[in-house]
Image (cartoon, rainbow, N blue to C red):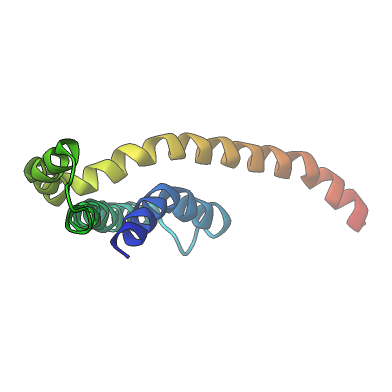
Length: 129
């Protein structure tokens, strides 16, 4: 179960900016920039922390279920301090950095949307006459 929540947290983290920006692209009025930024900050922090937490819970389950756990597994489980603390204090930063490439995709789609409306605008006006 811990592994499933770990994987779902990271999938949610990877999908979050694209989902929020697609909502913004389709419905600008209900998703202003300040709301999008706030949602990315808060939700990426939650998803990052849950991903890191449940990863170490999964490692703990592996250690408990294995009669003689490997040294690598024990070392990975023992080196959790910095990752947990960094995710706790700077988990929101991962979301901000990951949002940047998505903003380029958003701007490209917005540009294509504007060009399409400029090109089809005169055609639609002629058909309606």
